[in-house]
Image (cartoon, rainbow, N blue to C red):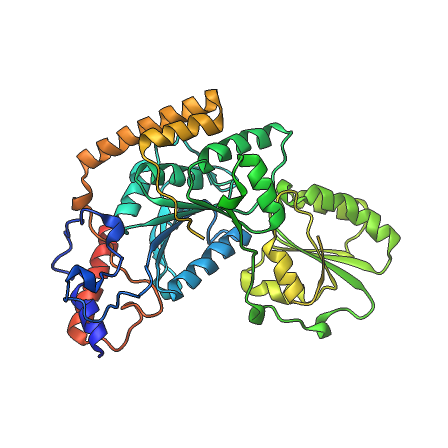
Length: 440
């Protein structure tokens, strides 16, 4: 066993020291000390080693729910783990799946007991999620909160509370919105409040960036574009699977309104009437499935429109390679993940944390009032004050230093997967993980 592993394990808490007092500045707990500080107890750490963060991904949309946002969060988390960062995910409970679960490379997922309101998005009163999210942020020593999707109420709550706790925040927007209908107006106003003091915003396409800048009245330099991507090795073409005498159009999507299923149901009979050799292969499930079934029944297209139902992610490639054209009819998506998967399979397709300071409460109130309008800004400035007072109450009732520090079991090189550690240390650590899981 290397000297580095011995030193690192020596500074982990063991099963006998679970009540570990929190340091005065939690955001510095993952920063490697420099030799200039005169600390010689860390001989294996070099001053030039890059800063490592503990990142909490927050969204209402995560596995076992299937979709592009869910896949994006999972793949991004795995890449960050490989870079040496610690990553945890917070989402709402899905049925019996609640509590703490571990995924590949020790990726830790908190399934919080929050009530779902509509389409897998939680109900929100701003304050009710504060105790649960604070517990996660404190236990995991979170330094960056990364929220995903404008549709996620939990993501908006997490950004609001994180800024109250003085944490850096990042938001990734995956969707496009209009400016005229009532739902867009309300969502855009909420987004303006949420993003006005967020550290940085990420969009998945340049069109999405323009849309977000306009909707949230943001300076363009605070918004970056990082396009969606997939592992091309998992989505390889196979022309032999295509029907030689027919043109197959593949649609893989959740069958809901914002995915444009009503539009799809309108164009299927028109295209089938014009092109006798055209057929549709549709994968996905949702409340709008009935629309496609009615179209198929009305126009007698049973032999040309196949509805495959819900698909596991591992089966998506086998469906895509059967088609010639991938069709995306989404009304809101900025850069659909399925488009990238379809292009990788050979189908024709139609269709960072900024170095900003976290604002203090008084400056945050001024930002809200100046950026969000006199009425909405004043209302949410009041919410910010109440959120801060609620945080003080929680810290008085349950101080940060009595909340147990979570075991860092993430990453490909963590003690979760190491086989070269000595048996005494390894057994102590396994006992610690088991006790933590029972306690949670």
